[in-house]
Image (cartoon, rainbow, N blue to C red; front, side, top):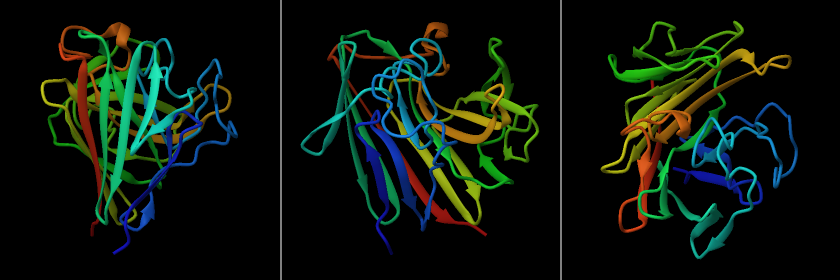
Length: 257
């Protein structure tokens, strides 16, 4: 069995450029809107792969403040500083699993939202597996979120053909799977004592206006909202008195019938 591999580009916001697991590549290479690092760019441009979104996903700064920063290394850790905080990331891989360990150093009480903004290379008909009845928050256009339960009134469980829609959702679960072409990819996030969820982004040619494309995002998240500015009590992660917070993302893949 071949060891899984993860490609990263430290010059382009620490972005995961490749995730080969279970015998295939899972990350979407993007719509070709940008070439080379986005270092210092003032506005987010979708490059595909997996962007580290921190301290927010939507809002200011859009997709967080890390995607246009240059990361460095400290031993086996990838590191980046932003706005008085320090984020460390260590990615480990074996035959069946990729594990990403995170350690944030920040002032006690610092509130944030973090997401592993993973855009996946999936065919029409791929499905998203989440337990029925899971509470979720739907984001339609720029309107405030509305409460729903999985599989939702919009049928978000299927990555269907192009229909001009684009919908975001935050699901109250630490784990979600995607079934695509005989494989199942599962994300699971662990951070005891903090709000843990999974965000979804299903773009069936509805975004952006004028030059739409297709993309499927499955995004393990600390927090329960896309925008830090809309986070109520319990909706954002909070750095404890120690000034450090650790979390772990585990990704596995297996064949399915």
